Each structure stands twice: as C-alpha cells, then as structure tokens.
Image 1 (cartoon, rainbow, N blue to C red):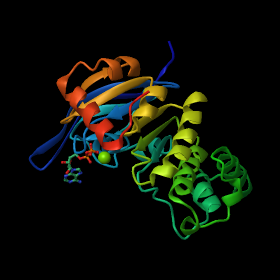
Image 2: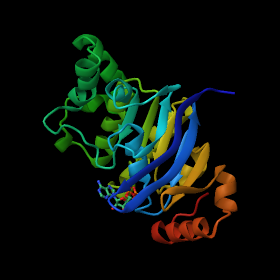
Image 3: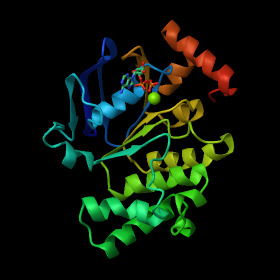
Image 4: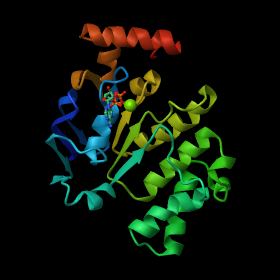
Length: 250
Ligand code: ADP
Ligand code: MG
C-alpha cells in the first residue's frame, strides 16, 4: 500500500451561525488524485482553505506526511502544499519567470541561478518556456493558469490543491489546463481537485468525493459514481451539470 500524504480528520467550520463544514474526513495516498464534486456553496473552497489554514478550522485535524499542521508550524507546512486558485493569483507586476521563481528564492532561500533553472524547467513542463518573460497581462487565461501551476510545482510540493482551476476560463482555454493537470496525475503527483469538469473527474480521479451541505455525502471510484450514483442528491447534481455544460461524462 502506498503511503498516506494528506489526512483530513473531522474538519468543522462555521461562519457565524452557518455551519459550512460539518465533519469532513478523507485521506490521499501518494500519487492519488481525489476529485471533489458538489454544488456551489457546499463548503468545497472552505475545505481546501482549512487544509493549509488560510481559513482556521473550528475543530478537526490535518496531517501532511504524518505531521499535524498546527498554527505553529503552518508557515513551514504551507511550503509543501501547492494551491492553485480559480483566479490564478499571479503577481501582475512580475513576469511569468519571476512569478515562478519568487517562491523558491524568497521562501526556500534557493540561490537565484538555481531558482531560475527550477522555474524554467517548470515553465517548460507546462508548455510556456517561450513566455517566460511575458507579464500576466500579456498571457491568456489558460496560460496564466499554467504559470500558476508551474509556480506551485517550483516549490516541489507534496500535494497540490486545485480550487476550480478552470472555472474562470473561456471554454476554448480549459483543455490546455486540464491536459497539464492530467499529465501531472500520470506522473504521480498527489492532488486534490475541486472541479465541475466531469470528463476530467471520470478519467483522472482515483476517487470521487461528492460534497453536499458540509459533508462528504458519497464517495467512490469514478466509474461507479458516474454510472451508478447511490444518493438522490448526487444523481440530481450530475443531471444538472450535464444539462448546464452539455457534457456527458465519457
Ligand atoms: P463552495 O466552494 O462549495 O462553493 P464555499 O466553501 O465557498 O463553498 O462556501 C460555503 C459557504 O460558506 C457559503 O454559504 C459561503 O457563503 C460561506 N462562506 C465562505 N467563506 C466565508 C467567509 N469568509 N465568511 C462568511 N461566510 C463564508
Ligand atoms: Mg468554491
């Protein structure tokens, strides 16, 4: 059995009187891609943000390679967790190369020349070596998101969390980002992906976690989940998504 990289135990979080996470637990083994599906407002982003304490959970525990993430060690632990957001979060005043090498240089104190090599290697990997000196304003949405993925990779993370990485993209740009993510999964990167892309979920996920109202309502292998969802909520959700995006999971 491969080793557990990320373990989430009974996470709970309320905003005011609204309980957004009501006890979420799962684990991700090395090389797995967990895909989190679920309607909007069900706590998916809050869950990812609680993992590296961008949002402080009320209770529950998170372990990365068997070390618990705590308020005390979170700065060190965050370096090992890549995060790719819907809206890229690039520094607009920095080139693609600088966006990718700033983490290794400033956070990991890697010398500039070595950080540059790491950054160029990751830009090559996402197909953007020729855009290294471009600023975000000179890049398409798909290219910006690929820079964001290269930036996450440059830190040599143990796991990468993706929060709807293609939701802000024009339809014709989604494919290039999904294809980079698919390659990462194939190479054995450990990933947690919140997405509405059912094709990706079906083809790439090791397991689907279906979230509804702050809990994981249903989980299972993608084939099983898509062909035979057990809960009425999951059935309705899949039906709605296919109507919305006209996408049938293959
Ligand atoms: P999802 O990503 O599944 O769409 P979110 O985790 O973003 O869901 O949000 C879940 C619920 O928590 C929503 O009702 C949202 O309005 C609420 N929420 C999220 N972040 C905050 C916050 N910082 N303050 C108050 N409410 C929040
Ligand atoms: Mg969200």
